[in-house]
Image (cartoon, rainbow, N blue to C red; front, side, top):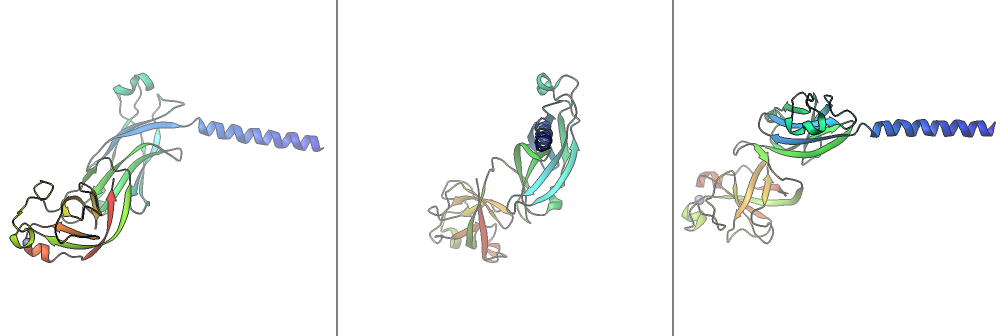
Length: 239
Ligand SMILES: [Zn+2]
């Protein structure tokens, strides 16, 4: 009786192992090639049947919260001559998935391929801008670090704000609103990309009055510089 039970348990164990290994056999590979304001393109196929169209989910996540904000079911349908040697001449491993970024609201998002419950390949980041500045692809963003709360002020190219520097920054660039901020380089390395209130800025200027946890945002006019809608903000370092 005991022997029968052991055999029974053993059979169950093997049946379960079999199920798991079959699942593992459904591994997919894929890649996101390109992302713009209308959507994302790439390719995906299942290793066990590379010549068949693959079902997958395109997952959009909010980078700051880690929250999944959209899951778009999709099936590959475009031919990819560059992959023919792997998937066969008749295969359609390519895809383009439309994304309505602006409907997600301002923020930083990543798109990635999910197949059989697993994330496959790379991810690409897209920034949806707030009121000023441009939305767009953020290349090479792999981490977002919260630097904490900073005092935020504004400045412009006038003599009172920039003491004769005009629109030229200390790093040699021409300052642009929606992009240029002045930082204390001992706190934030020059050239850093920073996310502040949904807007991506570049640390490319310094100033005598900008010390410690303080960021000075370049504005088009003195009036704008003196009437920023916020005096403090969480600052995120994108790298
Ligand atoms: Zn000014």
